[in-house]
Length: 264
Image (tube, rainbow, N blue to C red; front, side, top):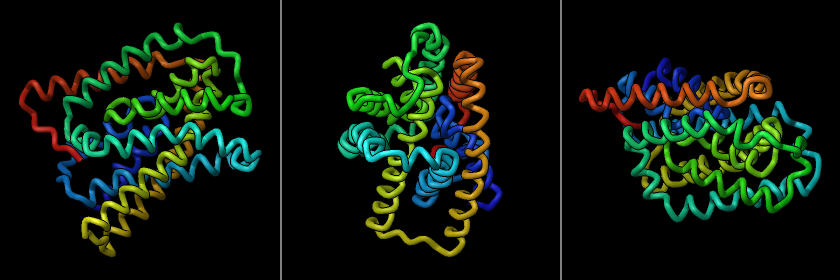
């Protein structure tokens, strides 16, 4: 992986991590287009640059992370289902990561759902994440587990989960951002642990790539979060739904045409 490729993947991560379009799916597409060959470091890189995106949430919502102890317990309750199912299904998830067809199908199905989300859940009354109950947090955490299928989108699953529990678009999106912090930190820690456990080492050049990737992902995610909230409040999810359908359709056409989509 070159520095240029690392920057492009980091831009993709920063733009798509908090949007309901699947960052994993887009990085698979981006890696394929740039001809990045899969290896253990590339797999680590695509997960580890999420730390930069995490930092953008903490910076933008700094006060929320120091508001109450109950805030952390609610995040913990929402995070636990991902821990359980992530450890239980880790091997299966790794297999799904290597399926461009699965990503395309998940993008299409998720896109169709997003076309109707605004009509299905238009009666949100909870506009402040402080008003989320522990039961609601757990249900949103269960929705997050759906995103273990590559191409589904963690943010889409958690935002739709929040809206199904009568959260407004804004509140659902913000809780999704908050939940991303322990989820991404946990996923990155697990990936690093597995990387070293399997006997791999990170070289000096690879450390530089990780630093560059995280800095770029942080800066881009800052902008993406700011504009996404404003857009979501006025426009809703329909445009994201059509976008997913178009991208998923293009992948399917490429696969049916015999194009070799490399995976990360």
